[in-house]
Length: 109
Length: 117
Image (cartoon, rainbow over all chains, first blue to last red):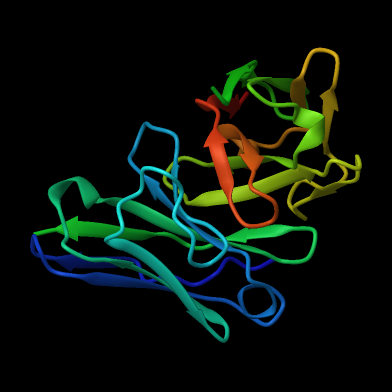
């Protein structure tokens, strides 16, 4: 159960787009259509942003999107806003088990 | 409203035991998949345990043989029994409801477990 690989940090100016990658293996990301993404502000519970690779829960704006190609999933935040500054984690089903990514800090410049 | 409210946690010595509780409202814990996720200080999120609606359970290698996940259908509560606790088990623990296999939502408020002598 090795953690999925994410970049340590990404940054962008307000209004720009940023993309976070999440690389796994054929035993997790590449093997299932069950990747999710979470926004985490310190001291608060994580918030689901994307599930089943591309689906947005009610209340998540459509400038947030998810995709997957092979063993790499991606989260794109368009029209970056100050409130988007947070830690982001991917998570994948891995056949009865689950594995999270290493986490990415998004900084709004 | 779907909600999870956690209780339990606290300070325990290495080798000790602790049970975390999570009370659900707005849905049945035994009718959905439920997990525990933790975050150690300064670290990322780590999946810990899952219980599926059929009652089968799975645990991360790091807690296998020491932690047990279960639910009480009458009380509509989820539990995590933690035995043989280690310093590295120190973390904020969250109970979560699953959207099938593809996502965790909602999350409980989190409870801090500190393992220290």
